[in-house]
Length: 496
Ligand SMILES: C[S@@+](CC[C@H](N)C(=O)[O-])C[C@H]1O[C@@H](n2cnc3c(N)ncnc32)[C@H](O)[C@@H]1O
Image 1 (cartoon, rainbow, N blue to C red):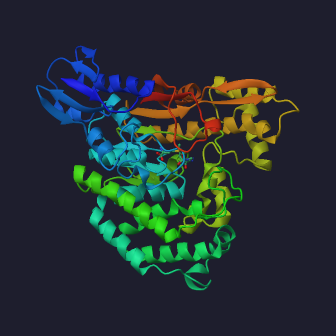
Image 2 (tube, protein in one colour):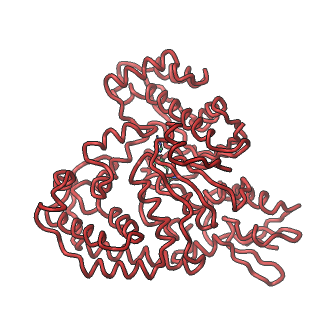
Image 3 (tube, rainbow, N blue to C red):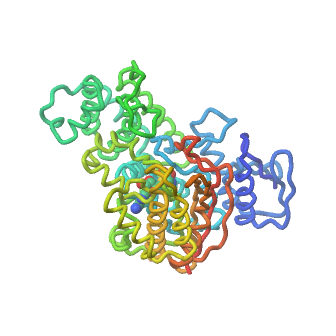
């Protein structure tokens, strides 16, 4: 049997994952590389072969079988020289820091996770892993502290479960019945109004409010899908600079085309991709769900995900001291009534890896760090103290916060490891895609090997570290090059 590559260029880590998934799913005695892919000897299980992610098809004795990934990537995507990443419902929203969808299923393959397994993604974000599990017919549970993440993740699952014709009809009615919503009475006179007025021109505001109203008249399954698509376009039409990860006033004019038109085009494109995936896999009932919960709170986590004992966990956790990506989502959080405007800062400060730490809080964490009250392993506790000792008077306030923020990040991740451990079977694998980081303190450069630090912390929280695989060229969506982390790793733990 010959397995053939997809027709695009691969990163080195993708080849490495490709060989690993072949090894794990098919266990060939030997293989040889060919110009199109690899040749294996022996007979193989077709169902296992169809699960391969980094191969488009397999040919054996003149018979060709396409992999599910080959079918998914082709469905609705026109380019063939680049890896498709927005196939199915992945393109519904450009949530910052999204997983590469291929990696999710490659992880499931490498870990040889059976299709009946229950999967947990504790930092599920916009639900890439839940969607990939849905493609396989697996049920998965996600948790995230960000209400927009939970909204988008559940909307994607609903999109897979709602026939594309229903979505298309709903869209037609919305566009037909849409009326700009003028005046400040009624539904616009809520606590969102002042905030939205400060970021949208009056004309745009009447359009987005009218659109929201029209969408809200639709079937409950269609509403979140259409609202998600609209929310993805909001920043482009606001007075915020859409290219900036921080909130700054834009210098360029807002687009000329009316919002409703752009929404209609985007929705049609999304529905076409949904139609394609449904023609390949059928309408996929919702068996997965994202929950709004702080994963560092073990009790809250138990209450929200219930008594399920998961067979596998996989996730891409936040980076240490990440930029506050939630800034780019403020308009959506408020427009969708998910977070009141004056709660956004509080939400941001609760995110693992947040850089929000002020006054008394900062002194509090500094005290915890000095005496290692979170009980981190010595190496991580000492590392934070070493960074602290390196600070000089030249370092500005951002840099001065780095040691304390890193200590808080490590402590929060320790709590998350304990929470997840309490929800999985013994020996269950936990795969994390984690990026490293660097900082300059007192003129000295420190490369923070976050994957290794997290693996060591996890070992004190009920996990054993099985292996780490370097993914040098892995790039999450939405990270600017200068913030991009060039040392990502796939860290594999086992529940001990
Ligand atoms: C790198 S993103 C995950 C992206 C996701 N894999 C996707 O494909 O969209 C990390 C996520 O962790 C979430 N997060 C941060 N702190 C959290 C906490 N305390 N509890 C749960 N989720 C949290 C963030 O809201 C963010 O969505």
